[in-house]
Image (cartoon, rainbow, N blue to C red; front, side):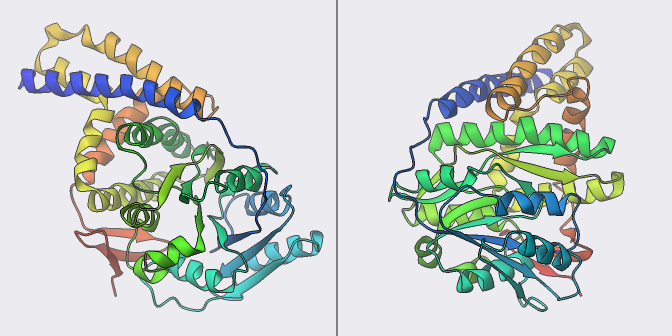
Amino acid sequence: MTGILLALLFGALVYSLLSIVAVRRYLEVCPRELIDPKPISILKPLAGLDRGLESNLRTFFEQNYPSFEILFAVRESGDPSVAVIGKLQREYPRVPSRMLVTGEPPYSNAKVYSLDLMLAMAANDLVVMSDSDIRVTPHMLSAIAAEFQDPRIGIATCPYRAVAGPSFWSRLEAIGMNTDFFAGVLVARMLQGMQFAVGPTIAARRSVLESIGGFNRLKDYLAEDFVMGKFAAEAGHGVILSSYVIEHHIGSTDLRHNSAHRLRWVRSTRRSRPFGYLGQLFTMPLPLALLVCAANPTLWPVIPVTLAIRAAAAGAVSGRMLRVRLNWLLLPLEDLAGFCFWCAGFFGDTITWRGRRYRLHSDGRFELVT
């Protein structure tokens, strides 16, 4: 058993070193200069009054870009976000914007249904799909439009720095997002290229979305972002990790809601890419080092070695790529919490999402539990 654990730990340490190299490879790509700014449609599915919603949406109205429109979708006209949208529309009358009331979604994934309806109303070929908890700088559209000047690019994922709310559990989760998550994305990008899309802001050409079957093909998947990029890559379209980093304000939740969110994440990931989920064990060197010491206490020197390499990898992703400061004291706690949630992801087939309960299927699809 000790030998097996040592082998797994060695693999995890190699993976950590690879993530440092992957960060350097990502930073070596120089952002393109914008020469021909094409008009862009921003698609914003909304549900409820998220923390900081007005500030988040305001940053999209304040884009320093010559031609863009913003489309919003809510399930019902009484949604609390409607008042926020109306206020911003009055403040920024020169920005073309529209709001769509979708009604009860016939798709399993309500967000995909909203995106489908907004895409049908969008005036432009290049669309930016962005969640309500995203905050950007005024040059975000310019950075994305510059990348799409390459006709080979069909889909771009915007990396994000997680901004936590005041709760302890929110801060803990943000650390995992700002270290482990994009380390995995960067290593996959370096070894095999981007064969998927992830995250709360994705840019795509309408023609590419139509070529993969449109949102109708994505309607039953929980991880619609992942399969969108997967289908596009399989169809021969270029998928990239954008040079532009957004802010993902994850809000403040208690332990119960935070656990439900993280269980939804891990159970969805296990079904979207099962082999990749198993491989996530190699992103957890500290729990593996503790297991090695539990099996053989004389091997305690692996702990400081692991901590040093883990800190270097976490610092490369969070500091050099995402430009965020880490709470180093919470990093080991998040490593242990992430390992526990990873183990929990192997059990159970139901999730809770926006107050509704869904059952996950083995192929990544899901359906409402009635």
